[in-house]
Length: 342
Image (cartoon, rainbow, N blue to C red; front, side, top):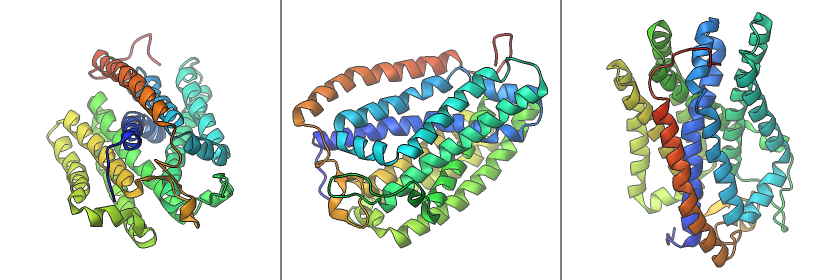
């Protein structure tokens, strides 16, 4: 791998950072949603909802920003992915809408059937969003059929195979772990104690999925390890990832929930870094015709466009970061329900 920190590589890293921010922040939202139905008491379900209530919509800003950055820097990738994965993206969009509507509508009426309906919608939407994101990552690793015109030539069902489904389930497990830790951070009393037990169970679930997915990747898609063989120092990412996951039960045991959350966030960041190193410099791998792959050079905007957009990103991204930090600072601490709560 020849690594040059040119404009194309800089944009590759920037988009990776934006999507990593989304995975860390909206990841615990999706995890809370996936675990939501396991809580039976209405009051506790409200606490779970209000743990993400002030931040869930702001977290999605990172997804919008990442998508906008992809459009600006690598328009051909944006066009190929969004047109080829049209059905998958429409399904994802509907799930995002249903999740938002469920959060807002759930507590508007006191009837049990009303609240259970929206609870179900919230949980299923969160589950499917996490699953579809994992399936998308799995397809980028395994490759998709791309024609000479850089158009996706497959079907939606072709994107669902044992490997991509495994990556989808692994993503669900990761977000469940992340969400359970965030739940421990934001709750107290009996619900917090129950969530602490869920943390250990979700860690076991994730580790089993992660080990299985890693072995499958190395066996069936060995190209993901090429850069690590060329630069053995990159293995430190895998080491940090394992240490971060192993540190979570320790921090939970000693009541240091914030440290446990940061360890979980570090694990997500390292996983996406491993993924990015594995696919670099490709953005969309073509299978079975690798020569038709879309990479950071043959699918990029002009140098002038990349330069101008980098300046704009340098101005805009700090505002997004400042907004995120301020919101989390304002709504720090344990969840307290009031007449303004969901």
